Image (cartoon, rainbow, N blue to C red; front, top):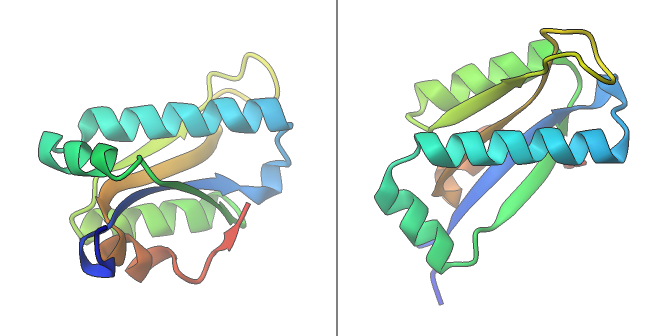
Length: 119
């Protein structure tokens, strides 16, 4: 079993202010997760997959917090993916609904997200 220093995860941040229906929220989270994985280093993805592909869904207050944390993650060298909705169903076109960080070392991600609550 991996130690805390070598465990991997991905976090998905979802805007609480949008009050997305569960199905829409799940779809947006899936978009963010897949996009972040496609952008990630293969070695990180492989290590994360070996550990079971841990994903944590967290809530942020609004777009401002989402973008602030996304920038902090980028500045820390994490792979990120912000999802902008096409606006065909629930939200207006161009709405930033969520983002994902990683997969990467959990300790790196936690430095940015440890204060957030689970969705």
